[in-house]
Image (cartoon, rainbow, N blue to C red):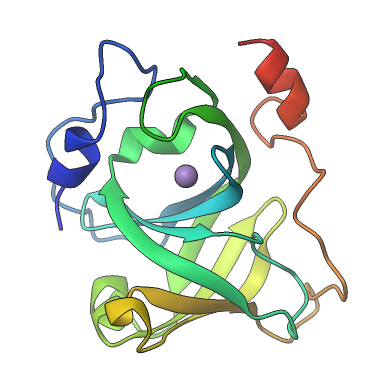
Length: 187
Ligand code: MN
């Protein structure tokens, strides 16, 4: 996967989203970045992005990630985004792809317990150890056969960071401390 699909969908003279540079070689290091963005577009969802092979591999999660291990959330694999997208929060103007408000909901680093995350993704099973501000500890991504294999399930592992009945909605940006309404009001 490359950034072609990401760029095709957007007019960079109209949206404040980054076009991204060339996909650089992924540095081999222990931890890579993850970011979760709350996105109020036609419908509200959360975009979960993992740094992998020089891009942000991305899933859209209608109900958002949960800290409750019994909450299995649908996560739909979507197009890769540029690494710079991880810092994006703000308003995508009407008439543009994904028009609406984006908040940096969580960010941090991750390790993949299977080893190379790109290989684990190809195998349909990612066991992540996250160090974010909201998401910490073990998180599982498991591919299903639905939607030509683009539908995954996301759920929290049972550890000291698990919280029953957790709801992703109604929290503030880890980048700015603002609520989604405050980001919207700022334009
Ligand atoms: Mn989105």
